[in-house]
Length: 107
Image 1 (cartoon, rainbow, N blue to C red):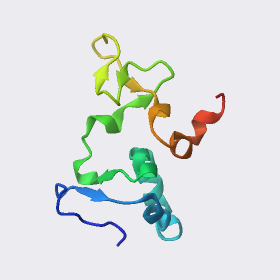
Image 2 (image 1 turned 45 degrees about the horizontal axis):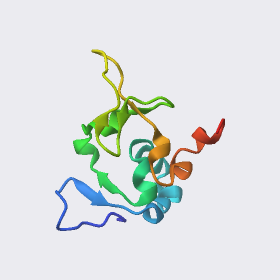
Image 3 (image 1 turned 90 degrees about the vertical axis):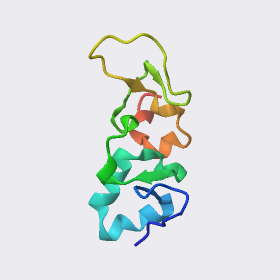
């Protein structure tokens, strides 16, 4: 398996490099696609949250050109209404062009 365990992480977090993830291309392309959809920061070798613990809020925040949440500071950018979707600007992530190539269409 390509996932490396480390002793300083909770048991449900893994270190997985983007190079490791590329090894899934031939064997498990559907798993690679799922990981890229849920954890695009894998481009920057972020920690990978086990799907068994997939209730992390940031996993469910969509992109917006006019976001109401700042993921870098972990703060709301403005007051939000009850039931309003929280959004962030994916372009704030390092290497966003690799993870979100679809955002380059109009930019």
